[in-house]
Image 1: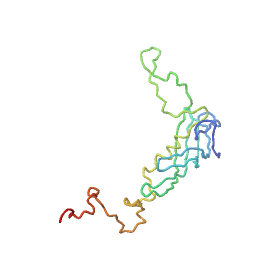
Image 2 (image 1 turned 45 degrees about the horizontal axis):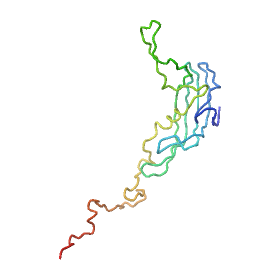
Image 3 (image 1 turned 60 degrees about the vertical axis):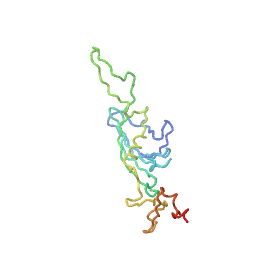
Image 4 (image 1 turned 120 degrees about the horizontal axis):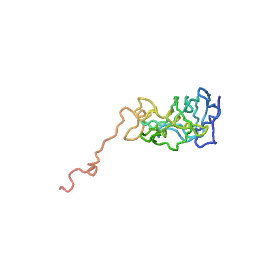
Length: 201
């Protein structure tokens, strides 16, 4: 099933409604989605620009604990080379799998005692798990992790990029081989032009 996704029924740009999925373990649905109303997604130097399309082949499956979502995220990431500052583009396609647990009553979600009052029962803390919001799942974390986790920290336009000249800021590849700048020691800057003969007859 293909859909151009722009959901305003819930907060968040990546909410998806699972109402068509029966809550019987083993039930499964597949969707082709495009999210194009969102803020920029990425790192400071590389990311999907605001409202640019993020395509997802999504599979949702009912399991006893909730909804298991898996799929493939594809998007064009734009940024700049960290050596020469030229613009770069990177096509990214990554997979993800996340379990969204059914909503639960979190009251009394602490350690409790059994009926004899002699032993504490350890209750697993599920606060860090992803939970459904009614019939909705929020795919934001899955999408961000899929797009960002494997990105290079310092993206470059090519592995052999020489960067910029530290003296003039021009791309090294555009400069002649003999290009160089005269080096000055700032500690002696005040003595430049002094011939050592001042005050002598």
